[in-house]
Amino acid sequence: MTRQYRIWFDANNGTMHQGYPLTLPGSHHDIQPIADKLKDGMRVVIYMGEELEMEAILEFDPSACCWVAHPVSGTLKYLDGSEPNSN
Image (cartoon, rainbow, N blue to C red):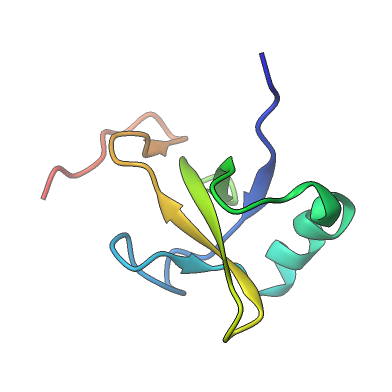
């Protein structure tokens, strides 16, 4: 089984539909040691502190010169045990 990399993101910096640009310091901290391993289409876990996590597909946006995480439907997990809102 291939290990999925974990990358911090901020749910307020993007949307579920357009993706989350991984441009903030927490994201850079997680990306820096694995930057040479990241590829378009790679599946990773994005997380926001101890609140939530979900799987996402990476895409490099050359115009913004950053990675964007596109959430995988049905993988959202609240780490406090609550259920995701289905709206």
